[in-house]
Image (cartoon, rainbow over the protein chains, first blue to last red):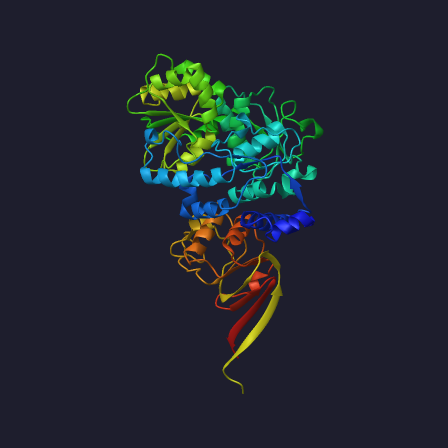
Length: 398
Length: 141
């Protein structure tokens, strides 16, 4: 890899420990993946924030970097393991909260915006078409590449941080035109009627397009929330973090449908629900917001919950960013949701909070949410927002 | 007739992933290793069920494996092993990937890849000097 004089100096330690370590990481990755140089990035999204995943080792590493590390570009943060303000309300224990706060302090010291959301594009970290960025958080990476047409590989926590300290990333993979070419044609004949259908569809595509870039036909309409859900699901279940849908996502008209073709029918969508849904009726937790809810989704939840009461045996969580909750507070949605017995889970989500052993069963609109909940030994069901709210009110899935 | 032991020496050249020198006894596997969930950072033991090296201790060894796998949190596991004094002395891969590369760099564990790992057996004495891997094998003549 060719380095400029300035980059050589950073590698030699002229800008301190954090920049030196970061350059070592970027150069090693560049060499492994055959990058010729580093390119500037417009923004960074850092994952690996929950103390649940980081442990003391991660905390120690981040604290060391925070001693002299300062980010050079707009940098936002993935969800943490708890609501940073109202963690007690979510049943988080004190020692976990103390450690989680130390993690957040380290990121804060680096100059990172403590956004704690997997939807940075909803809160002001919004790249433009063709912009190079270095993001971790697979659902956001997929959204940025596919829906926006920005360019990023699927970074891990440390490599995203390294890009933030240097302001650059190695130029390989999805930064290059020749690597952004679809290699499997997915044609869907099933009608996608509700949000969870997009999660189920993502499951089908992911399973059939393992490590491939799908070119998807048969879809003539999608909104932000549909695509947000699909992005999370398709990459969780195996595809590369980029897809094309002609007339819906940018750049798709530049490509021809690949020869290898798979058709997804109504039966396939039903099968996806069957493999995601476990057999249970008593519902311990209903969680909406994987990825984090948009304000449109929060408004919908408030409208549907109005005048209803959540079952005393069931918790109802709305996972979203603190920024979206701010709008919800102003509009009165928060009052409606909390009045019905629901809770906002800001800054965190069902994939990264320490939920193991606390709930036996969860109902959600999200296929990705089900995937991670099973890792937490929970039984899962996926349904429409209407079905989720009914389950929360009755305390049962019927 | 000559009896007793003699030393066979071999030298391989690879690519530096994390620079430095290291010496130790090789612990070799043909299977990829997942550090997150597959290795216990507090005991340095490989705990992945059914792994060739299950139950083996990687502490102070030269760990020889084709490549890493699994969650990117594995990089932090290597860092934790280093801080606990449980890290391997060095690592040799056929083809290094992101998790091990980042883990080796942040933990300052010498790591070399692009090495024909089939030439290294468990128990060989290994010296890593930047991109050079020297192998000493005691064998009965």
